[in-house]
Image (cartoon, rainbow, N blue to C red; front, side):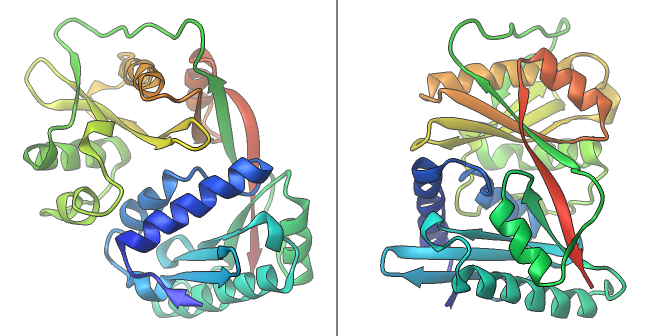
Length: 301
């Protein structure tokens, strides 16, 4: 077992995850491109990655890895198909619980259960967690939708004066931070987005697409992640500035993103959304996405 050591480990984790999905399908796994988003956008440099990320190796290379998220009261654990249901998977889950519990207690979340998300199709993980004392916390809360990229794609329709382009790197950092904050009521401050996302491994400004308003400010954005092994693109995140909502900008930026994915050789596209959000249901259905997976949070005090 080793702690996270930066770019080389991220690349190895992404390669392992893509290979596992290629071998046995994506039930129980996130998109390989989502890893840098979870590590850097999710943890935001506020926690030591060498303590909150662990890799386990076997004869074939990486056999498993886990990521803790103290301020989200949980962790992710991904295990190779060859190690599913084994003592290694149990050990990884034990590490995830113990590490999350320790950090959550330190960060003021002692009253919250430790949570980890489980695909409803992943009976092996659900059984292991129940055996370890976890219980499902309600109904599935997150949907993963998928659509093919062949055939006719939705048109890109923008209000007059709005345009779409790729981010231009560090010169756009301030505007990117502002639109992320305004879309999600986030609190990125100073040069946080530049330092903790744009300058970190895995980020490519050419894959962060923005809608530019007539006054030159950013009105909406999306980041596209690519899995070249499985030829699947992922949207994560997608957001519209609060001052520019209900104008069709989210649909437009995603229609543009679908075309970008296809240009980059992807054959399928995915996006995740919270299932209690009917607006997301309607948007993604209109763009041709159909639910493929649903995830349930399992918790343990």
